[in-house]
Length: 120
Image (cartoon, rainbow, N blue to C red):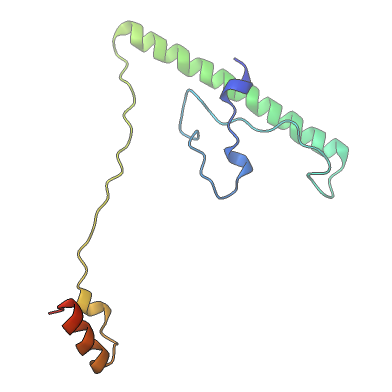
């Protein structure tokens, strides 16, 4: 399997959560092209070790993906495999007592709010 088809760049954005973290068929890959300019203070040998470590990680990830594909294919052949269900995001809305939001409001402002918005 070639990593160019399955590589995500989620790890390049700190604030973004990687959607590939729990995907057994499309796991996240690590960059193997870091340079000394991107790592201030690290020597070339240290950066090369980081790239080598990331390359080993990518190889392990690919072997795990291959294993997951083989397991899924065996389960499909045996009629036991069920497609993973997507988790539905359930939005729960709680009712807020609008008047309690304005408890610290002065009486004259509260009277105007009650008149305008029909607070009870």
